[in-house]
Image (cartoon, rainbow, N blue to C red):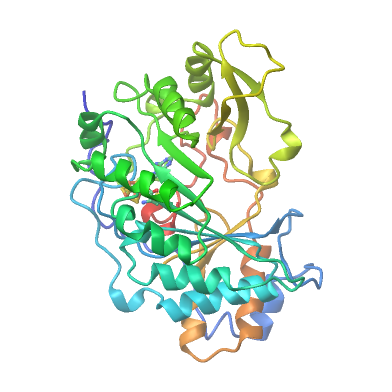
Length: 392
Ligand code: SAM
Ligand code: SF4
């Protein structure tokens, strides 16, 4: 058995598929163009969109590079990485994050990639982020999504920089399965990274797992037991059609219902109050041993991110920055708005903020993956870059 992969898509088609970009200075810096893109937008400082949502959660990709090759994310040979000069510098990242926090209502910042630990200046970027305050004086919540390779050496520094929340991707507890899924024999390094994060006082620690049929789909209860034992929170993510190879297929989807059925064979799950979810992508359940007194304290929580079968676009509160400084209003956007060009052409904060607001006003109401029945990708425009280049 192998990780499901479609016939190799032509490299470059998606691998580096550059999406339509609204490029300043001619367009985005033109006041008429900005006014046209924001017709009907209320005069509020935040990142509102025309469907009534407000983005407060910023996801920043720090690099498109990675040292693993998870089959659902990128091909074994890797991708054509972004040239260094196209990537935002640390100062540029921090400037945009500051602007988001101080002018645009951003309250949470999650650094991701690619693999964010490959970014040398990560600790400095995190420290600059946690030093920021919102206009009402609240601290900013900084978090990281990582594969944890090398985290054993950097956890203490990241904790000192103010990092509290971390999501570590770990699809299996079995080293041989890990090597099959990621094409690298680094399972022990991931475990060492998670343990170091916990020892450094970073928490809550969430474990992100993607389940693949015939590979690790039987492991949900085991992963949950392991996470509960260590005080981590498991998040099972439905595989999305956002891999660089274009390999996603409905037959390859382990759905939220499949996962919950497997978990319920071992544990009792009690749905958490939906009001607690807010804009979070995960639906969560309190976990107790099978047959335990339902009024007894739970062993912990588990979450399922069902982007395909249980869309949560209506409550989405995210805005995204790619490593090369493009704003995306959605993971699945088919267009982007260039802020790097604005920064590098000397634009002031007011101007950059206006362009960011205009980009978010045009956010689509929903991504539409799960709408076709039977579930296929037909009728759904695949995003113009793979997940590793956008930032998951
Ligand atoms: N390299 C880091 C990591 O793996 O945590 C951060 C970037 S990765 C793109 C972020 C998250 O996206 C990971 O938890 C990964 O499992 C998830 N992911 C990647 N490809 C996916 C796909 N096709 N469907 C669902 N989740 C995916
Ligand atoms: Fe790398 Fe994360 Fe993609 Fe795996 S999911 S290949 S760790 S970017």
